[in-house]
Length: 112
Image 1 (cartoon, helix red, strand yellow):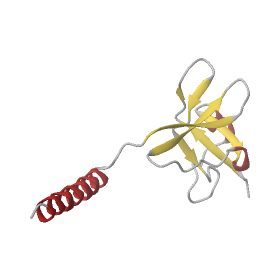
Image 2 (cartoon, rainbow, N blue to C red; image 1 turned 180 degrees about the vertical axis):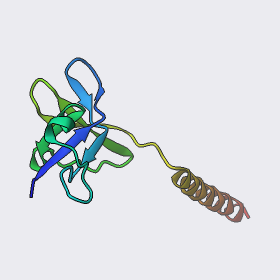
Image 3 (tube, rainbow, N blue to C red; image 1 turned 60 degrees about the vertical axis):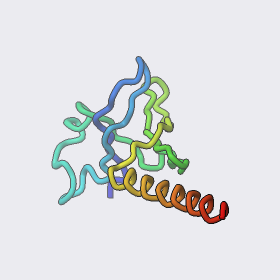
């Protein structure tokens, strides 16, 4: 089995570095692959061994964006503020309301 992964939708950051937009782990798979030749895939992206991509660290409130250096062929991550989903925003709002209610209750009950 081919252990290469396919990176595409490369978005330039500067003259050397690119954000990796899409990672396909089985580009040559009979059922889930692209059914294209290696030559055709290389016109739109790059093929690399999966072990060449470092593991992304987990940092609270941040998300890692994979970056590829064309000059060195190395990969790294840039960590950016995580964009919250509507559900996450709602949950944060609910937690803040609970904290404010508790503080008000403590203030009112403590003042008697």
